[in-house]
Image 1: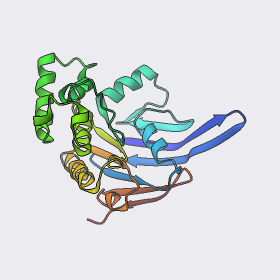
Image 2: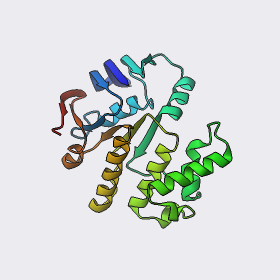
Image 3: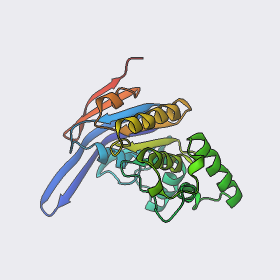
Image 4: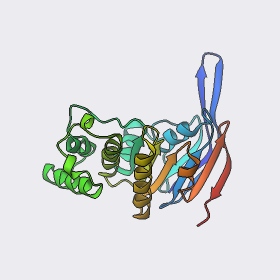
Length: 226
């Protein structure tokens, strides 16, 4: 599904350059559940941003579902991102002025989905994630775990092929964090590719594969024991 070849990301500030990613080779197959780990500043979030087309590599190539997208225009990348990639962040990024249902429906606003179908899909997704009773509430009326469920619903509503999660439990207590991890395992079991950045060894152990980064390089690429 995803193939990175000799990918580097270099940040320039005047005459100073910082290598965030250094010659990364990576293949991620459809249906995998991959955890990205490593110390702060090792390149985890940079790698996730590149995988999610939020940034472009300084060097190297990126193939997504068999297409080399390295030289695609920003408009084409936006279209691909909206249709095939979902995002979950540590900060839930919900809009307080909108209800739960409206926050989720926002992800379908720039698609050709008719209004009635959008509402039906939102209702079904909220029911699936156990928050349909909160559909008319504002984000501030929800617990942290419920807000993250809304964020996950928004990420999934367009049926993405891959779900990217950047520290999805970072702002949650352990109980709500465990709920989110169970949801991610369920989502993966249903066929969605999941790539998650985490500092938690116990959460990383729940993935089927772990990548450990250090100084912008993948130093460990290991399958988890079944």
